[in-house]
Length: 89
Image (cartoon, rainbow, N blue to C red; front, side, top):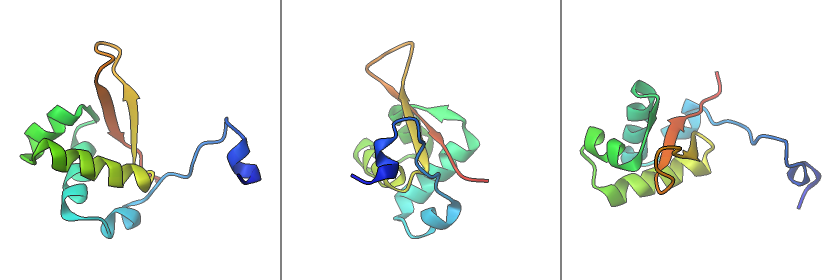
């Protein structure tokens, strides 16, 4: 573990559209859907993008690897996660 990883208060660097460019088309589509809609669940993303739920999960995992998407638990239903686009300006 590096020194920078040992600090819990430190946020990881946010991704950019440059990071998204090399991802699969499904991840690009999910990023665009999140760009136009602030916060969504996986199910909402699947409905909006017309992608299968499994593809949406894969796309979100790839976007999270690039620090482009942030996720948090839903306050109304703790079983669901809410996703939002977190790009550096």
